[in-house]
Image 1 (cartoon, rainbow, N blue to C red):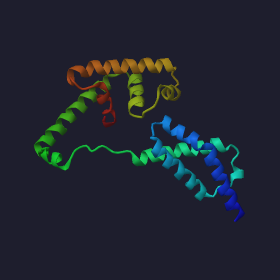
Image 2 (cartoon, rainbow, N blue to C red):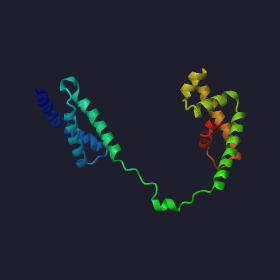
Image 3 (tube, rainbow, N blue to C red):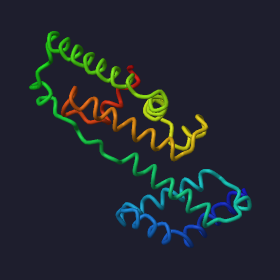
Amino acid sequence: METTVNMTKWVQDCYSSYSAHFINMGLRLGFGRDELGDIVSQFFLDLLEKNIDPQSIQHPKTYLSTAFRRKLVDHYRGTRQVPKVCDAGVAESFPVPSIQDTLEAVQSNSELISKIRKAFDKLPKRSRQIVYMKYYEGLSTDEIALRTGLEKRTVYNQLHEGIKFLRKELSAGAPGIHLSSLLSLLPLL
């Protein structure tokens, strides 16, 4: 019983000491004052329910500030409104592509992938390896340098030259498509 009384007193003292600090923290993050009053109160009620030993906390302000920041993040994530993409009535007005349209799209994608494959195969071996590591494996320039044993600057230059070559090769074959879109298709090669 005495532990509960000590915990209640500690939480009340913390509320008196830090509630203004927490409200200011929330205001800086864009929360409203009324909303923050409720969040701060709920935070201290949750803290009381956790029944934490106050003596185990060496730096109460730091501990509570971190916990409150997490509470704000959780609150934001919980209340964030996901925008509607479209209403049901609008969705019904979009035509469903026919099988013919779908087959034509797949065929044109196959042709595009074939063009990318041919251009990719024309790259020098080192450039092809580096472009592959960067865009297929998702490695950074530093990670590629470590894996290949090349200097970071060499990796950067090879990557630059490889992209420049691909852009030149594919600009005639796929006008209007951005190189980043083409590189995203490398895993299909």
